[in-house]
Image 1 (cartoon, rainbow, N blue to C red):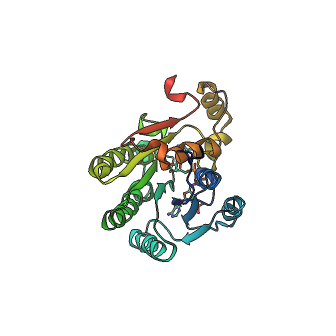
Image 2 (cartoon, rainbow, N blue to C red):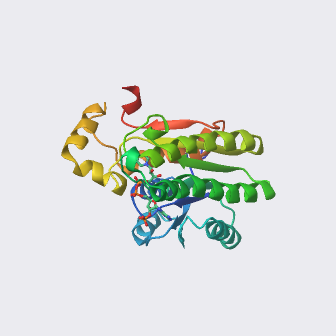
Image 3 (spheres, rainbow, N blue to C red):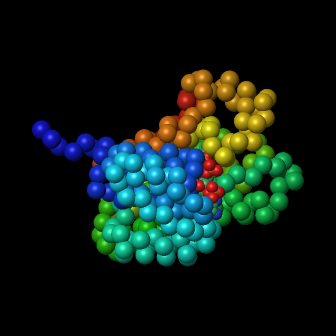
Length: 254
Ligand SMILES: NC(=O)c1ccc[n+]([C@@H]2O[C@H](COP(=O)([O-])OP(=O)(O)OC[C@H]3O[C@@H](n4cnc5c(N)ncnc54)[C@H](OP(=O)(O)O)[C@@H]3O)[C@@H](O)[C@H]2O)c1
């Protein structure tokens, strides 16, 4: 029998925010490997990701925008839907971190992080969900959470707040939209080698203490996250709503 794999994304189009680098790029490549077309949302050139995705013989479309402009991002999503056809999934991956002692933390560092990590993820999900509901189509949303969705962390208060918040938003949207065949779930990456963790890895003491606590004995790579996203975007996970999958080398089990 030649039934398509329930892990295949063939014929599907998935939007990924922050697709130019790091985890977003790893997810884009994994989607392409599973046969899906990718729409990258971001503010930097996505040429490198485009080449990696197109090598699998699928389409990559780049939509340039600063995701803090929620109306512009929603407008781009709507235009892409009209010109390229229906979008089947959205991965809210773009995010930033600011490090400072809680006692010295500024309002700017609070607002900047919450704006991109939490507010933009919600309003892009809203734009996507509105379109799915209007057209009576099923869809998938995958939010990128963090170990700091479960733990407090240190010197990263707005990041911890945003990543706790994204789990709440994931569960709320799952509750409201599960009955409309829209699956909303999250992935919580452990410590992954990307720009986001450059400062941690540059601090020899912090880096060694993190590594010593990871049962897998290594930091994660963006590709470690990609296939978990494919699972949450594919038919295989059709009965999953409001779940969070840690992909952390065992960090939370420790
Ligand atoms: N690395 C880890 O260990 C780790 C662990 C847990 C969760 N995460 C989460 O994983 C996600 C991806 O992070 P990463 O580790 O891959 O870090 P990264 O390499 O720094 O990537 C962050 C992405 O977000 C984009 N972005 C940030 N602000 C934006 C804005 N205003 N408009 C458009 N795009 C914007 C960046 O674009 P530019 O390149 O143009 O700045 C980049 O594509 C984040 O949500 C992060 O919190 C990371």
